[in-house]
Length: 134
Image (cartoon, rainbow, N blue to C red; front, top):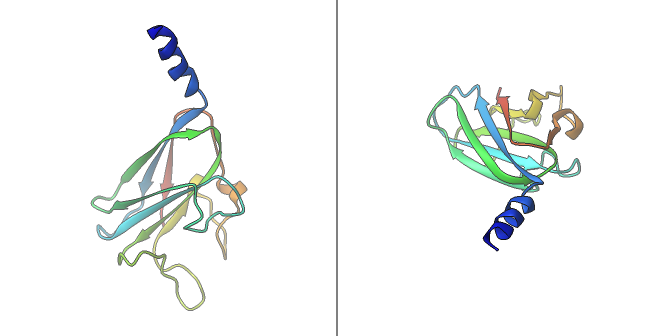
């Protein structure tokens, strides 16, 4: 009976994996890093519409966080460094971010956030990705 229960617990988690995000490019050791994981193009990269999120205090130049047990799916990650800790990505009068930010696959677009498909990662097993904020 115990073997059956263990098997069911293990088999029940066969379609989930961990996503470890390593954040590099931190210049100022202050503020917070906002990490948002999105599972669809319609909400990406609008903070507040993400599947899961994490806010980390900035206490070193390289940070990481692992999102545990995410269902196997396509995801895109958006990150920003909230240097002044006001809870938003600050922008100038033209709408251009003045705080560092980054996306999975280090995707970049010229005048806006990259589309979901350019930042998309396929999570099918435990995986680590590196995002360099700029």
